Length: 436
Image (cartoon, rainbow, N blue to C red):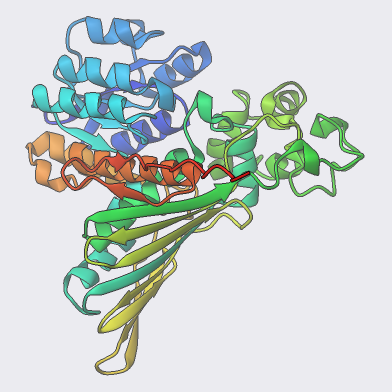
């Protein structure tokens, strides 16, 4: 192993670029190659990392087919394009940092896991919430037994009204068939996190949710198809110019979301993108079909329960969590948490000193940085114990998402197979025929 871990990046969009930047800033890694079909993304990325033309590829197949260039690869392609490159690079002996979700289907995800295991490479899934300082300190308190046995959990993910419009109405995750369910794309983090902090096996899952607001039926009578042409441009909460103009001149906002909206992060470039591209479309045009709110209920094999709510209609903020134990409770907001000790009837607030805000541009409160550092250190030292979001544990948390979607779509409670972790398809009895 070299003194610095050599990384190749497959997918030089927002996430791939961010992970590459954090890897270099760690001082323990160097970027040696990139593959991306977008010529602008390739050129900008290559310039940022001083890559020779021989290390820049339009197609990841050409990168993996040649001599092994790196110790590890970051796979940050669109969700539906994860399985093929991950399997190919694992077969070529590369360790893999894979953006979540692993893949939209269980079969593809299992194929990824089996490839990593067969070729004895490290596979780490980007469940960044596991690696934050907040989670680490919360997990320590829970594992210490300070609040006794966990009986119930309430967990909320506030997506943010404009973030939902950006990513799940106008953006890459607007239609399930083209990416995955909203629960998988956005909240596989949360079901993974709940499974991790509770530390128990899920036995049954139920779920409810729908697309309630972002539909043509709710389009105002005066609204135009494009925000720049709309008489409601200054009064609509989802007006694209109102949402995006405020990020111009802000280094964090220009990194995300503006770099996703346009390759030319300037007033003129943004104006062109909102006039001609998908991010300037009215949110009520019907271009989306994923849910804008969902509730998932988990029952663990001990009888403990957890409820998870994800909703678009909030400010963009850290998750909120309340944990109820037999000897105490915890109330957390992603930055700090308050521990109520029932034995002494005292409360203690633990500040986790979160770095930055909750958005991807801010690195999810420092969690992105910790995830990348952990991956690099695991590769550098060969110590896979550093990784908590490995292949099998991440596969299980994905299986909880598929179980929740099966429950939501079938209107049933779905059981989890104790041996495989897979959801068990419910048997829905047909209605009894009416007697004449």
